[in-house]
Length: 576
Image (cartoon, rainbow, N blue to C red):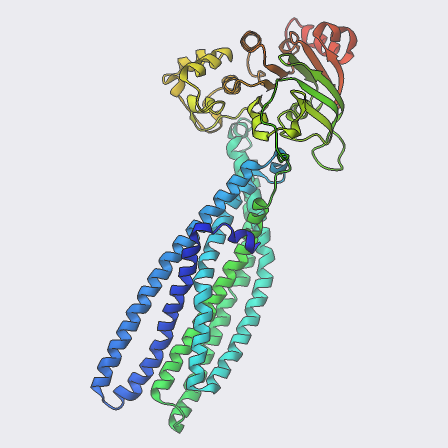
């Protein structure tokens, strides 16, 4: 885990190395100062040597300024290194998520990924800053201060060792008790973010069903769980403060008592005992800061484990060696295809055998859960077939370069997604170099030009997050236009005209038939009218292809298709 995280330091290695170097210099200055202060008292003040006091005072001023400079430099480098490390972690995670296949994405919730990119990275950033600064400063201060106490009086140094052992045992006990709770808290954070995301995204549904009180209770329940866990964890962690203060004041009392006896007995000087007070504070403050570092590491360890989960997730869809980059045509073949979303699970697609010629229009009809979407997702390799082969242009899709394949397959999913930005910016997802004329053309094909032109800003109209300021039908037509802008060899419309009226639906199909005749078109629909003029229609039921042929043939040979057709036309219109 540490090795994987360390790989994200990269260009901030220099600052990460300089920080402990500057810290070491700062500690060295701070440890020398009490020793020189002891000499100042014993050899200057007590004997009244003003010349010695002057020069020793000058040396102390120089060391103090040097300690200040080294401290400032270490702080600057630590801030740069930790902030840069956090930025690289976010970038590495985000970039890796972009490479995920659909099955990889299924392993993480949206809220879980957001929490990892925000809260978890912040925890690791804070811990890293403390590791390269406080975690270097405190042990060095501890060791140097102990050496100094040994040179002054070995008996006191032995007492400090005993205190360090007691504190060490206490900190280990705190660490082991608190870490599992923090792990649980961060998982609950994922749940909290999911609740917030669902509520904000579906706020219109919440209000239309008057479910505000229910949502408040759900939010309150999760928040209460986080509160209780954090309270329990913090209660354990705060035990280090009284333990630390007990040791601090205990040591000071022992030094005052035994030190006075040693001074009276002539074993120690006044300067020695003064410097011992300083060293004991340095030792115990170092222990206190180490306990704070330990607390931060407890929190950061749970976060680091979650971050590494994302960084080490490898897409299960990879290019083969020497992948093919040219797709000959839009023909599609399913050869004995079986598919399951999870290993060792029941197939949601079974025994699929289809042969589709380039340029054909293929309708797909089936009830909810008949795996229509699963079928078409195998074409651009959003998932791989569990068994069997899917071919595009006569070649197994697994032999293609994934990016090249997907550039030739445009897919408009069931859930239409628009991003924050202008209409032009959204449409150029299909082709970033598209001209304004090309944008207008595809919008006319998708029957979107009329309503876009009616906006005051036209194609420069700003689309809010998720397309919340356009209707469902408008969103669908913009998504279709975006897909057409790719000029694909294969176009897949996954129930993408369900929110438009039958007339507009017919105009869209007519435009596609006339304007892109060489593109293979798959149209998943609930309305028979949306597919009846297709070259062939796939009828699906329970993950199997029960019939495949043109409309008139299916009316005679497919009972399922005939029942759907009659139920939708009996009333003289289309039913959804």
